[in-house]
Length: 460
Image (cartoon, rainbow, N blue to C red; front, side, top):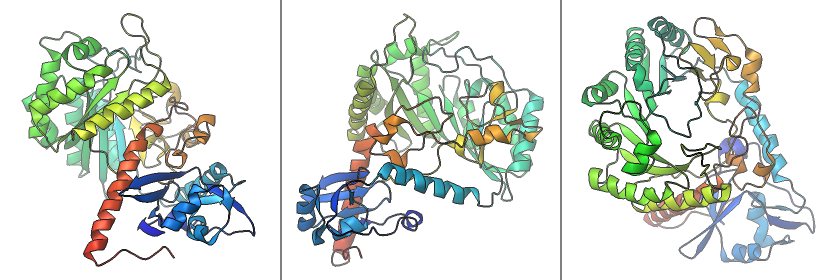
């Protein structure tokens, strides 16, 4: 067994080499991904993050599993690729995650350095799948925006450096509040970068320039749910004065010109998924192969009837398989460039689970999750600070859904008990991404090994 990628040190410190009892029978641990590349068998441990290439003797041993311990299994057992028949890897991961979270909680914190800000809950689009349907429309006042600046300045830590995600509603409806907060932070000496989730309809050349220079916008996620007809029908813009599809595609070009990264996301269901191939073609025709644009597909999650009363989301299996197929098409056309990171044990979830992050609503309320900004989720305000520590801690509780127990990528995924997504799985359909990441890591390792005069030694 030759090591291609080292295990994570903080995980190895918790999970030392596995002992062996005489005559023990071993099987493959559930959280191991097998990849075949150039006639070699690679194994990736989804808990430790280690990637190895097997010898022929080791390949022969794993082909006969379950089986009694043999010398050919030694390193595979040491690295927890093979485990005893009665081993409970799920509970092992739960235990390790609990320890890592306790160690992290004991660390000294230096302020809140990530903020999700909703300058408004108003939106100019009427997407049928919007989770904010029926939410009270509120736009941030000048006074509240000033309070937001003071709160960030007072809670951002000693280095006075933060990241902001502008969320909504449609954030650009309150572009003046974004500008006010940006100017206020600069005046206080707070350094910041920002990202945004937007439909991008209200942008023009002047606003894009302002976003780059004043808002320090580095990345924007834009949903373009199909080609022209489907897109315009799904967005159903209020008082649209031109062709929304053409306007948004033009604005995407402006972001690219200004070197702002665009994540073009097509939310798909049974009605529009066939548009994805054509959307890739349109993108290629308009923008060539820009490093500032990537295109990917994401399923509509939930039970939302469209304007004709139809629920067209498909089954969980259909969504997963369709996502694999569409994103594989985007990858092959070089419009989708996944990070290529190999999975390993994570112990923290999203920003709702992060003590260094907070969401600020349009009313100046502090909440843990940007999708739950109702009054009963308030943990404080920008004038009072955090006052409901009990509610904060409830967002730190991890769920243990029955469906997750069987997921090969359970160590990588942290689901929160309060999360409205429930036990919907977002990692099984990433198997192809992880497979490709393992192959790329192997190719890089092989090329480096050949340059230095030979492969690395076996794992010790």
